[in-house]
Amino acid sequence: MLVFSVVALAFSTGPTPEPSCKTIAQIASETEDLSTVYAAVGAADPQVAEMLNDPEATLTVFAPLNSAFAALSDGVLATLLMPENQETLTNLLGKHVLSTVVPASAALTLVDEEVMTLADQNIVVNGNGPSGPVTVLPVIVDPDVAAKVVAADIQACNGVIHIVDKVLEYVEEVVLGGR
Image (cartoon, rainbow, N blue to C red; front, side, top):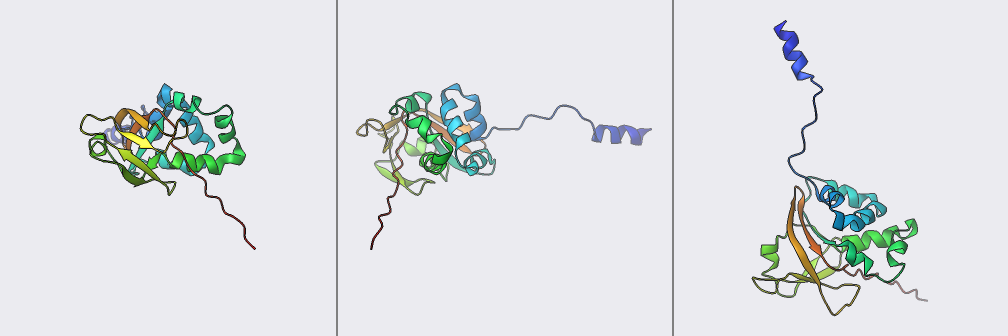
């Protein structure tokens, strides 16, 4: 009878324990102010969602607020979310992701530092000294005014999220045909 009790405990179908931490994608899905970027991740190449859900990844995400997307010109967001624009959307989102964890304390020490993103394009991060704010360029709307980190160091098991008030600009390379 003791053997039966031990076996029954081993195969108990009780509730699944909560994970010890949440991924960047899970946090974005639960954050009202990030619902637009979360929808964009869903419309991008599936590898973006996989990466942001990978608990083994080490990422920094500059996640634009919903208001940052709302500030884009009329129709831009709707156009980006169309299936035929998935590659452009994927690249735009990649411009917001670094392949390493950069906490705000490290970002505050940077002065016009060029940092490579997963879109294979640099962003320029400026810590503006010990009191900040951390700013990032280039941006789409009002390009002379950098995106500002409005909430920093939101910890995930696969990195850190810094919420920014503007969408960063991805510059598409144009291949010119020759004769």
